[in-house]
Amino acid sequence: MNKKVPNLFLGCLVAPLAAPVMMLLIILVVGEDLRGPSYKYGLNDAKEMFGIFGMFIIFGAPIAWAITAVVGMPIYFIAQRLGYINFWSISLGAAFVAILPLLVMSAPNSFVLYQEPEKSSFLFYSAVALCGYVVGSVFWFVSGLHKQYAHNKPLEPTR
Image 1 (cartoon, rainbow, N blue to C red):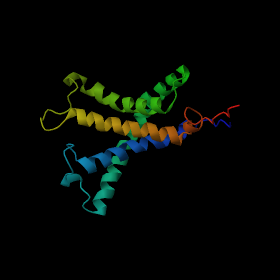
Image 2: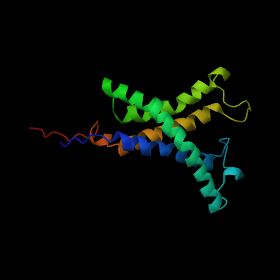
Image 3: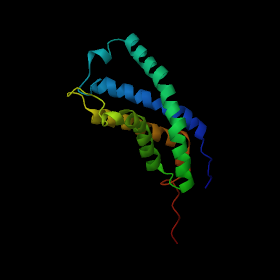
C-alpha cells in the first residue's frame, strides 16, 4: 500500500475555516439564542448574507487558526507520539479543543455563559463542540490522514 505523508500544513490552513462557516450556519438555522431563526441573522437579501459571511470569516478565521496553532497542533503531536491517531481522536479532540477556550473564560462564572434564563449555556457549548467536530473531520480528510490510518486498510485475502 502506498502510504502518503499527511499534509498537515494544508489541513491546518483549510480546516479551521470550517468553524466560522459552521457557526454561521448554526446561527442562521437556530438563531442567536438557539431558539429559532431571528430577523437579525435571517436571509433577508444577498448583500446582508455576504456581509454576515464576511464578518464570520474575517473575525472567525484568525481565532480558529490561533486555537489550532496554540492548542490543536500540540495535542495532535502528543496523540501521534502515543499512537492515538484515528478519525475519532481527531474529530472528538477538535471538539474538545473548540470548547477549551470557552471553559477557561467561563470558569470564574461557574461555566455559565448567559445570565438570562431563556438562553442555554449547554446549547452554546454544544454548538461550539459541533463546530470543532466539523473542523476535525475536515482536517482528517484535507490533510490526507484518511489515506494512512484506520478503517481504510485493504483487506488481506484469506487463504
